Image (cartoon, rainbow, N blue to C red; front, side, top):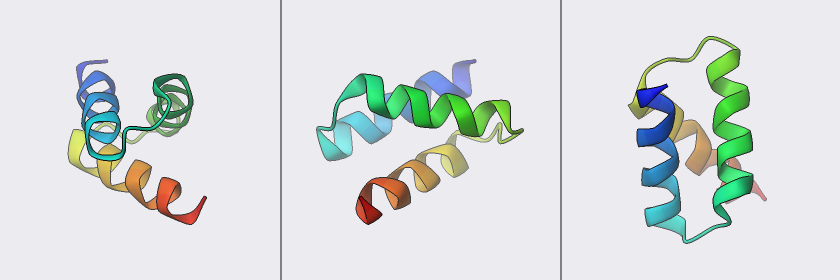
Length: 51
């Protein structure tokens, strides 16, 4: 869960996006098995760039 918190904080700080939306996306990745904070952050940033 710490990895999830770190990733959410990083994505919100870098993009100033809605925290709830970022949390939902990161949580989904975390539940799929991604546990590395760097990978969660990178994938979160990629998804927000596409949106």
